[in-house]
Image 1 (cartoon, rainbow, N blue to C red):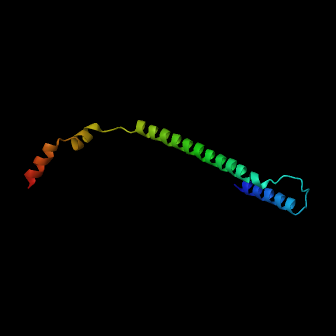
Image 2 (image 1 turned 135 degrees about the horizontal axis):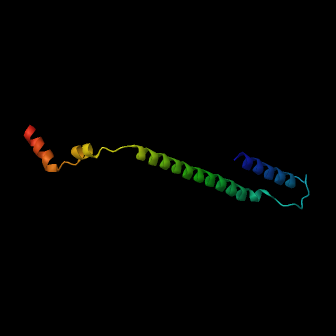
Length: 97
């Protein structure tokens, strides 16, 4: 980003010198190319952030896969607490009332 700001400043200074006849007035104005340079710089920054984000997601997925392999699920307690039919829950509620 700092490189782009420096480049824009140089382009602007050259245009200023061209306008004030410090350099040959037959030169080209380079400030018009600042939009192209900024597009390239911001495109590069967005590409770099995107690639870094993809890498971080891959690392998180790999660590999650390792944690899932190490974990030993206790299916019996899960089934006994969560998989009761609704009718059993209702009858238990009615019995307590």
